[in-house]
Picture (tube, rainbow, N blue to C red):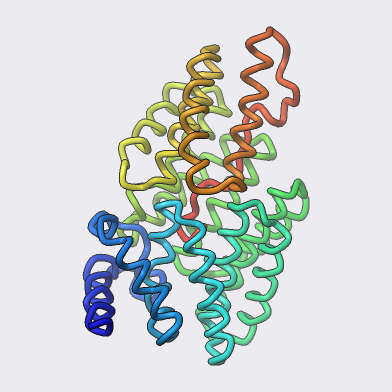
Length: 337
């Protein structure tokens, strides 16, 4: 009976997740509308996967490769870390180098970035890049470009913009698949935004969105919309920013997108001088996050904005100008990514 349940849900997931574009494993399971049907079945699927890791780890790895992007979009970081760590250990034992490198670079490291574990994330990317060097083309180029891009984002989050800029330059120089190039553009935009060039960031985000649409899109823009909105906020285009965040807010099935949409709308309200409305929205976000994690970098972003709100309420300048617009790791779809 247990085996039948496993077979049923593997078929169930394949029918709803696997896409014709991209047409390579792992990347053929990027976020799509079909994932909505998984939500109601998730508690059972979770039990199936945990049992398979004990009984048939090869099958559990197949489930993991199908579900990494789903887990990201639903903000299920604890499950994602659990499954990916187990999958990486199994793939290492089996000598499945390319898959191990991919999970280390895209799935494991990015989730660790989101959880604020920057040193661990950096180590995973470096391990993945060493493995990637032994992979055949075009896998090698895809892994190297992605690894350099995510390493750049880790350095950015750690405050080393010079190192981040150097690494993203390396990533941009590597020919790669459109779904990898889209992620490189998002990372480049994040670095440009933190460097104060909102227009360059917006251009990179729009190019990432265009690339995603070329292979069928990813979750109706749940990764690009928050970035586009924040770039507009930074440039003082509040109407355009609000439009992007409200479009993101309409994607109610994608939990992480909803959180970032509300965060973006709080930023717009704050910049328009509506500190009380911004504070109320921030508290609603905080109540949602506390149910899932207490270490996610969105906490840091919220705390930074809360300090800004309090300063504006008492008529003081923001405590740190660099904190007026935090840009932590927005959902990557991986991851990421």
